Image 1 (cartoon, rainbow, N blue to C red):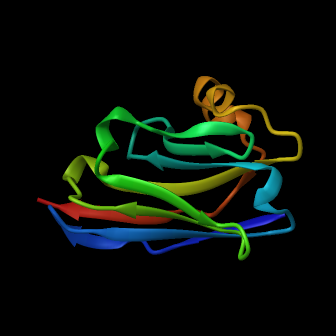
Image 2: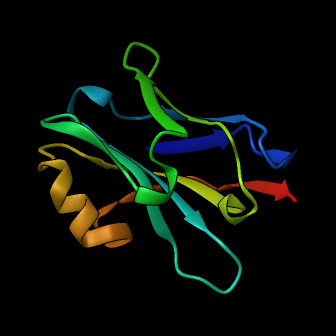
Length: 129
């Protein structure tokens, strides 16, 4: 089971990036996928989260209306489209997954990073002011 992120980079305030999370070893048919951000000196926090068996996609309040989670279940790939980027969006972004018999998304937003079993290596996003 493996996750590989890509798509990070340096952009100016107001710019856009699309992060990609390519998964192998499991399918999105029964999985929860989360995007996390870790800024220097801060804890890893969930930015967006989706669970196969439940409902709406979760977004952190600070990114609502600017970030969009999507996935291609055929290719087992998840995306995080980030627009109107701000300096406070900077950090290392991680893709994470939980697999097989996943609970609803609220479990993951309540538990945070501890709920996810598989992690990617991270991709750096830097937004300059």
